[in-house]
Image (cartoon, rainbow, N blue to C red; front, side, top):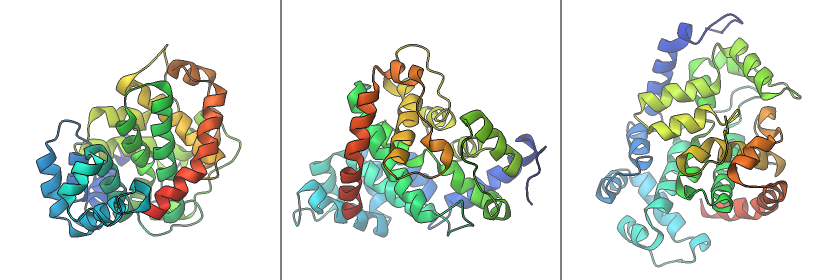
Length: 290
């Protein structure tokens, strides 16, 4: 059904759960299980390798990327195990997670959701988030990349939840994040952040990811942040940087970051400009690899 302006999140909770289950089985029954493994920082390498070796398409993608010019190892990587040895588990996680995201993406729906634009934006935010983590010395470079990949997965949930509503959705320009969230809730009955939170819980993904996804448009920065607590601020900057570098998605992503967000990470406007300037070249390299 199409949401009405007075629909609450509670009204759609069962539908969100069903949408999360449906999205988890898109492109293969193991997508949600594999993502749960990839996003678990304590998972044993052997479990990741076993899961990848049971997913031939993703294993082939890992080998393709490992042998690409991006990693300068062309022709030397013949197994997923060798790829892990040469690239490290963090890189393998990112490659496989990008493959999972591609498998989960539904077809185009109206003017608001274009799967190719969604993919570009997700990769750009992931790349920018990793750069901001490094610039801030937050110590969560790998987690920032992974969080960037899934930061807007709630939009895929909205497509599954209510295709009719998505087909008629036209995100307004010029709204601040509060107004944009209110407009989204009025149209769909929930926001993409709320949808993402349902998905994280349904797929047993880590709590730090839920927090990052829920707060990436309105991080509550209270003084300096580091480690996993820095991720909402990092995603906020990365969302803006991706849009400024012409890898945007919805207008709300392009809004300039608040001073408190920059201050919390110990960064300045010039740091944001540097990431934006380097993002097109980084994205070109990623596109050629992936």
